[in-house]
Length: 90
Image (cartoon, rainbow, N blue to C red; front, side, top):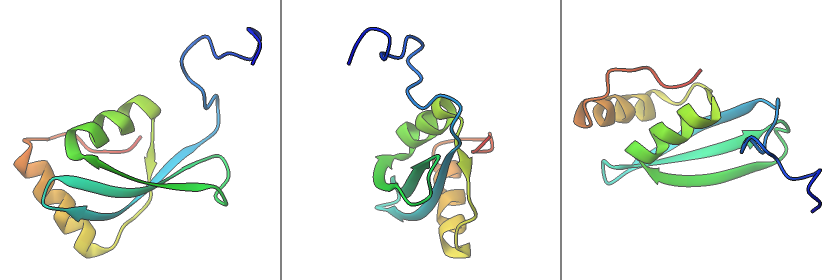
């Protein structure tokens, strides 16, 4: 990679839309989710502790897709557990 190709802002994704769909919660701490940048055909499955997931979403300006009602309930419990009053996504 040449100097011209290296992202100078630290934002490797540029203007491409970043989307996540929460697929589960493990051990009442970890968030499982599918993460996509730009192309829905290219998705990565990730798992992070809730605080790291929260930071990841804010830093990457993630748009959250709707999840199942059970996953939404589990996420509400995580928000309550970690004292999180803000909405995710953006």
